[in-house]
Length: 313
Image 1 (cartoon, rainbow, N blue to C red):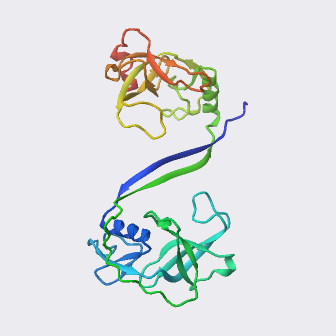
Image 2 (image 1 turned 45 degrees about the vertical axis):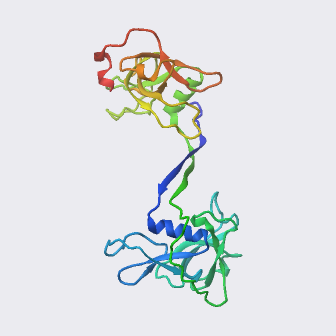
Image 3 (image 1 turned 90 degrees about the horizontal axis):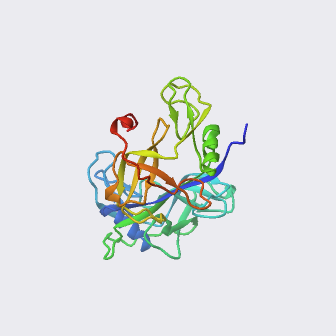
């Protein structure tokens, strides 16, 4: 059996969210080296703050400054820091109840080893040298044996408050496509498109999954399909994706390759976006060294009749 492919894969996108008045004040406060919590109806101070009381669900906006010193309530040692974590040397994850707060804040504690960490130890915020209004403005916590620091009584009002944040979401993992898709990808490298036929319903699935999704039986018979196909449905994309060198608007379509029992995804080019239509006959366009078609373009053939692809919508 040919070797199954495997490769590292990273999925990443920037997530932008707007901040309400409470989170805006909290993050702006961190930029100004002020830690703010919020007081609930029963007098508890929550840090980090939330906008609704977790007990009554009432909206809460009574901001309260707490001290940058506190007590470790529980902890776990991190032997191997990962990319993007607060410290690049081994550290402890800690829950710290800051002085004046009734709940604990999760962050990193800079310590020489696990023997130097214990529940009940006193710690203090170590501020980042450059702050921008994010939880990373607290670089970490550090051990502290001095007097309890007192808050300044800040009101939580800021002239230039932060109103939104951008958080990069990222997932790193190792992906293996399995036997069926390995054969599919190897064929694409030779500019051929291979599917697999179900021995029960006889549909040809592209890309193959190794089993028929309808009958639930294994598929092993390989069938070459295409290269031409029919646009079954499509959408016009008007928002430009970051790091994608394609000008908007462009068309992304479901394309039923000739001989396939399932439509696959592909970009349509070589035609104005407002002239793409269901039934349009298209063919793949390859670029030098590519392992998959760059896009599909019209073949010049008459449009396919609706009855020939209606089952593939």
